[in-house]
Length: 76
Image (cartoon, rainbow, N blue to C red; front, side):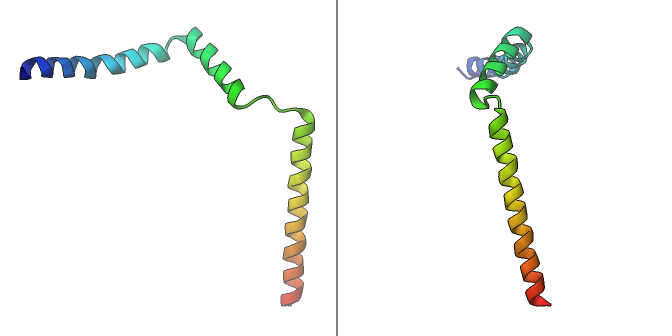
């Protein structure tokens, strides 16, 4: 019983990495799957969304600078 179990385990230990390596190297399948999944998770940005994000970042940066400037004026 023990020998058969060890043979099974060794077969599994050797087969699994080889199978994963083989699957990962199937370029057509990998590209199709990864590109489709990437588009589902992160849709392409729209220009107006990017512009709004940049404007928001700029507003936050200005608020932070003003806050630091006020703190510096009060401490001096």
